[in-house]
Image (cartoon, rainbow, N blue to C red; front, side, top):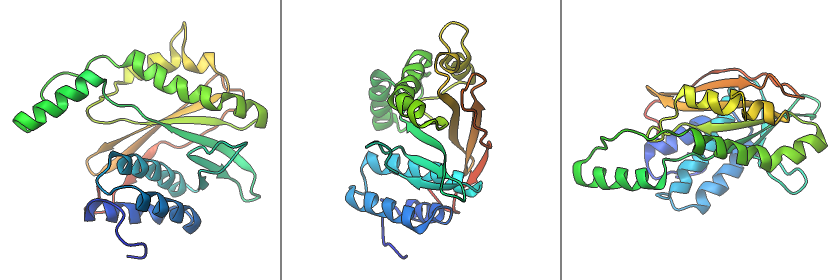
Length: 225
C-alpha cells in the first residue's frame, strides 16, 4: 500500500485507502500524516477515520473538498470549492458520545459479560448542546465570509440518536437550532448500517444561505472497518 499501515487493523487500513479514492491526493496526505502521528490503537484514530468518511461521502457526490482549510486561523473539517476555486460551503463534524455514566456501564458490562444490555438514556439535551456548540464555533465566520455552514454528527451505536430527538433539537418551536441560528444552513447525520454508512441531510428552512446536500450511502470497502 502506498502510505503503509495507518489503522490498528488490516480492515481499518483497507477502509482508509478506500476513502482516499474519493478525495484529492493532497487531502489524502493530510490524513496520512494525522494517522501516522496517532497511536494505531487510540480512540483518536477512529475520530479521524470518521472525518475521512465524511469527506469521502462528499467527494463521492462530486464535491471538491479540502480538509482543514484555513479560514481566519480556523480550520473546519471540510470546505467545498467549485470549479473556479470559490468556497461553496463548510462542514464541521461534531462529536457525540454516550454520557459518562452510560460509558462506564458499557465498559463494565462488556468486560464482565461481553455485551451491553441496558437502555440508552434520552439524548435530546446533550445532543442539542453538542450541535449548538459547533454552530456557535463558526457562526461569526459564516456571517463575515457569507458561506453556507453545515454541522455533521456521526451516530454511534451506543449513543442511539433517535429521529424524534434530532427533530426536537433542530425544529423545536421554542428553541429549535434552525430558527435560532439562520447562519446554520443544514445538518448532516450519518451512521453505520449493514456494511455501509448512511447519510441523512436536513436543510435549515430558515437559512440565510441555503445549501442543498444529498442524502445517500457510502459503501465500506469489503472487509472494511
